[in-house]
Structure formats: C-alpha cells, structure tokens
Image (cartoon, rainbow, N blue to C red):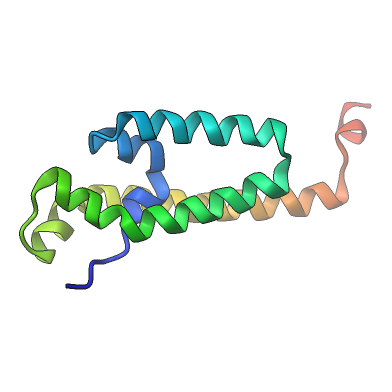
Length: 115
C-alpha cells in the first residue's frame, strides 16, 4: 500500500513528532537544527532542513499509522487532516520567508540597516 506524503510531519516537524510520541526525536531535531543554524551557517542548515522536511514527509504516514493505529488510507487522511493543513501552510510560509530572506540579503547587509 502506497502511503501519502505527510504534510503534517514535513511542516510541523518537532511538534508533530512530539504529538506522535516521538519526544526524544522531536527534542533532538529541534535542538539539532537550532544549533546547526548558529554553528554551520545558513547554507548547510538550509540543506539539512530540506532533507529533514522531505524525509519526514515520506515516513510521516508510517509513524502516524504506528502511533494512531489507522487501518485504512481514508482513516489516515481523516485523522491527519488538521496536521496536513497546518503542515502545508508551514512549508509554504517557510519557502516564501526563506526566498525573501535570501533575496533581501543580496540587497542589504546588516551593517547597512543598523547605520
């Protein structure tokens, strides 16, 4: 059975994992990605973020089935509906904000804004 892409897992990542009982993974993901932004820089952190977003989207339905005990795809889709909406909105906002930030960074530097 081919499982659907999990927008909830992709977009809400740590919150979604926490709600699915994967608390240690949620904390590790949240802290790891937060620290990575400061240590490795924007480009590496962005690559890791894209990889985790796609990976969680691909395995999220499996995790939801294991945690919630859905028996059919229709049950899965109905049970994950709110997460799907929130996750999709989150992914779209993340893309828009990331593209905006990279676009603006080519026009302004932080020192230009402070002076």
